[in-house]
Length: 122
Image (spheres, rainbow, N blue to C red):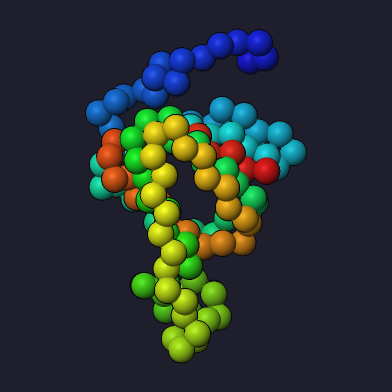
């Protein structure tokens, strides 16, 4: 795969399918993934165990951090009492923008438009 040029649009398979996640590269725990989401599609709240970076190649996505709306604190293990829950922080990332966030953060992703983005985990 070294020294090969790829067109991102050629890497996305079925453009009619909803979610597509393509592992482009993995090395010693670092990952490079290409993710395609259709408008309104979501990736459920999850914990990132690596520092990460998202580059939106096309579309617009929304990242929501400290997502505790449906948290029962027994199922997810966050151990946050209902009194201590923080308000969610929302970030819209548009085509051509890059966004960095730290590991050990719970977040979800929603496509505000049909979107394609790179996820880099370090």
